[in-house]
Length: 77
Image (tube, rainbow, N blue to C red; front, side, top):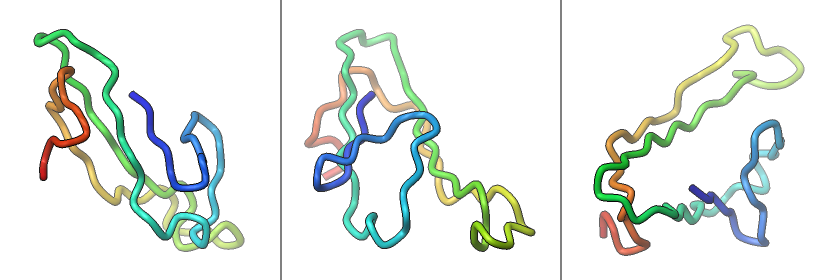
């Protein structure tokens, strides 16, 4: 699975993004071809409400489950 924001900002484990740089929706590509494979995509914010005072800690924004491994860019349109 590859997740990319505009300006070629690739999402990777541990990479931080500022909210101001994420104003457009990301492009999500599933790189599989197996009909038996399914993926889960989770978006969280690890320091709610902000980095200077993260008293609420991690917040789940959304979760999408059972994404087929054969999904292409037209899925969900």
